[in-house]
Length: 108
Image 1 (cartoon, rainbow, N blue to C red):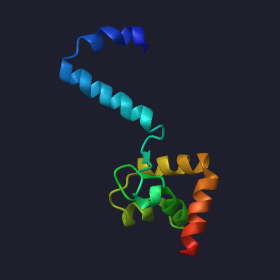
Image 2: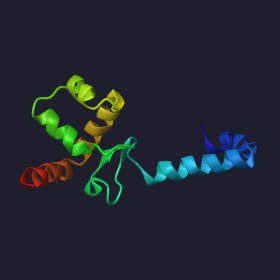
Image 3: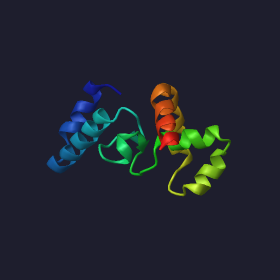
Image 4: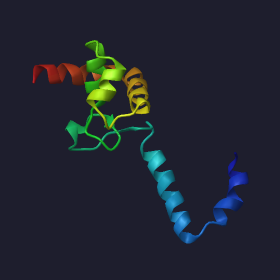
């Protein structure tokens, strides 16, 4: 789909629908990692699964310790398989960040 194809549909939206569309677009621009968010003063600003206080590093550390995805889903019932997949992709993209968070939290 191109913007040129989408333009007539966007213009046909009600003002309320346009506002909702803008909110969706702004949100997608501010959070390039689908399903992962960093919020100041929440879990030290660490990358977390969206709408939770479950840091990505906690999940990666658990997996490193041999905990299976099935067990993680059981231990964290609010998580989905998609949440775990998003966490793994984020961890691959930012290995130093995750390793540092694990190390810092092992000390504390």
